[in-house]
Image 1 (tube, rainbow, N blue to C red):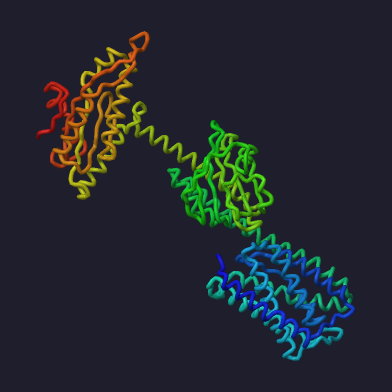
Image 2 (cartoon, helix red, strand yellow):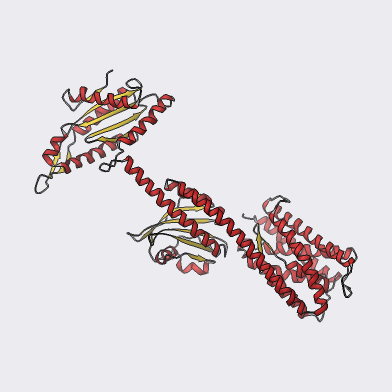
Length: 573
């Protein structure tokens, strides 16, 4: 979400107003207590910085156990030391989450939040009589004060984060927030860690930082791995469900639309490209471009094998992952926006050939990780299978619905379309439906004179001529042999008759060019043919589909063929 400049300037203004003055007042009223102990402070700071580099991301917010170390630092060296160490360590947190240039405002914002948390918890500790004069062991009073300190720290953290979320994103506070739960868990872990570190430091000094630091770092690392594994399992489950949904789609457009809509919910991405690879032409064509889950028209010239990021993936057959623009700018072919940083490109392989590619891009550095590339590899495998299934289904449908010679619809398709049209008649969606049956006159004589291949040429040319005439007015199909049928919804019988007469003249008045198969030189011949036609219209002429076809057929034979051919006849009941 883009933050307005007004809000960004407000954050910087608040930081400039509060932080320098607040820090000066803190040093004035709570002066440092670490004179001569600088190396000890640096040891605590080093541990805090290491822990800051192991953030656990909860709801896109980093959670660490740094505050456990800062608690011990506060108890031993005072508020000023704790504030300075915390301010330095949070910079490492921001470095690990890789903030973008547009998110630089998070530096003053987090600085202000950490300062307020440190200040409020420290003031609460001192207000209830807390000090830094401890005996050999912690007494009950100090234990209670430490718990107060920790409670105020947690509450202040929750309040300041809620205020910042509301200010920046208009997000309201909720007790069901997962980040709040993890903050609470971290607080429970932090309290004993901080107390133990403080007590051990008083007993053995710097060695305590090593003895506590190693297990704390290990525990943080384990929690981080657990969170990552949990997130990966969620994504894998989503990928499996997504894959099943993809393979259920029977049309390529439906497959691509579902992929585009769902991919950003599994792998966070701002823009994406789906490329189709033409291995024979050695070219890469853009199939789809999308932004934030929506397909957008984008024209890109075909790309070549071996050139650019897509060409590299095509050539090697291996996925590529780039964390910043510096890593891929030498491969830029001018198709990627100048503000893009991270790129992940996955090949779709079939029969050891790269047949497609999916490229996801982000304006954020290090937006994608290796486990996301693994998930994308699974999703792209599903996508490849789904596209292949859709293509096979489309081919099967075409073969079952189309005439292989003329590429017109076949009679099986017309039968289904007739059922639809009669349903529309019954539901009063259409008023009538007309059918024209066309039969070429003396077509056997054409085959005998010029050969069957020449006859096929005439059928193909006639199909093209009829298709150009019918267009979107109706549905044209090859009925079988030398017969064609035209289905005309919402066309009355008289209009259908005139339309058929126009078609008859278009056939009779313009000869067809063929190459005679019976001629040794396959010479070009102009052949004039005619056609007889029958017209019938429902509901006046027929109550069902078969009756409509039968009556148009009868009109053609009795009214056109038997009357001398090259005529149009209407059914008369």
